[in-house]
Image (cartoon, rainbow, N blue to C red; front, side, top):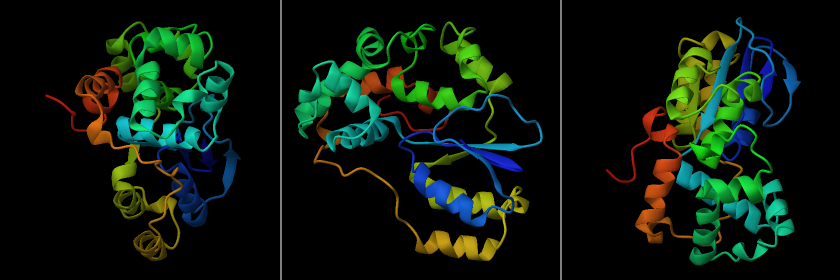
Length: 242
């Protein structure tokens, strides 16, 4: 999270968070209070606005794979220790096998995330879990109360932190709306901020080793939609399949 005096950015991994962080630090009206990358909030501050970022889950998986393909990240390290580094060969086949592993709740709990004491991966995918970890204050306490997807939906509506969502796919437009809309008082030099967004379109993304998402098996794509249902049912992303 990146906390300012009057708002907090919940920086979900692989959603363009480096770009968003750089922009907020440059144009926020108040000073940074706390800066812990990708860490959850411990307590909600009712006087602060909470902003979160998200990304199409299939593209987010590809970005995570590409990051690991470069030898980076904690997930790559855990897979190396589990003797699964062969997935990172930069091919469609390698990515498909890697994704099949992550989408299996039993395998992902056993090999990748340690012991999932709350068994959240029984009813959400990895990208959804990463989102939920930042979407709640003290998420582990919240997870103790979740038993299925309906519980997730209900708790997001009653206890979810975020009021503003920034999507990677519309990052510049969403930031412009943030700077010029009802929350514009949070920012200084608003004209300069919008000009900066027009000029600076770079994002901190991993290099795609050549994976073509259009060539993925249709049942695997459907599985992503099924497991990471939150993006389609709550965050407004268009389903891959009807």
